Image: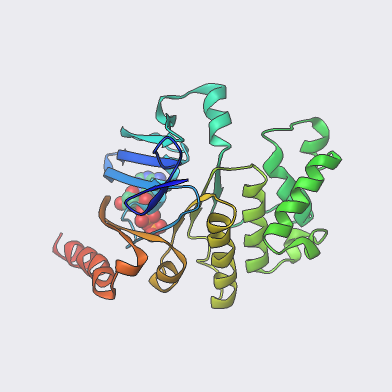
Length: 267
Ligand SMILES: Nc1ncnc2c1ncn2[C@@H]1O[C@H](COP(=O)(O)OP(=O)(O)OP(=O)(O)O)[C@@H](O)[C@H]1O
């Protein structure tokens, strides 16, 4: 893998995920994103910080093509996803794993069965939809659980897991999609500090050790700075800064939130 500006890029010189000029408004119109650019290379962990309403979740949803941007491009390994439709889009979307604040597991099913759901895009049958998986998919789900340190609890019902354990299972479910990119939207928001640290360790490991491109939206600068390689600060639908973590000082972060408060107070 090569490097450009200190960032990992694919052999063709492009980062795995490359977002440019992303603009999106919700009806009636509520502007949410205004020309946002963000890149994430294989093996890189990027944190996105910003005050409530600054557009972080909308950015991830547009990147995963769950929302349609009004302008801009989302490239996965150089291919523009915003130009794709139908089966091709569905296939490419599977290469983008999504982890949300709520793990959304099926409580009465085992951790293993929940993880195997990530394989549905490759293997869909009446049996798999009832939670009965062929041996190969079960083995892959077990490998994904092992990767997040949850193999021992593979056969536990999901509704008996702690919040941190459930979130690791959700990460394993995303891994079972065999993603190139992992997008995590406030994955530690409901977790205690120890569990949050554990989930962040897993996410960073998936970037640094497994070579995924990981983008994680956080509300905790104290987690973003030590765990992420780069931090993207968002303010009012725009990128306020995009810097290596080591160059992000506290005053820059404070400004991110303070400016948002001041602008709101004045509006
Ligand atoms: N479904 C929706 N319908 C209308 N407006 C929306 C919708 N979702 C978000 N918005 C608006 O879009 C803007 C960006 O919201 P978004 O949720 O992306 O921000 P965020 O940075 O993720 O916020 P938070 O940290 O609170 O999750 C806000 O003004 C928000 O009110």
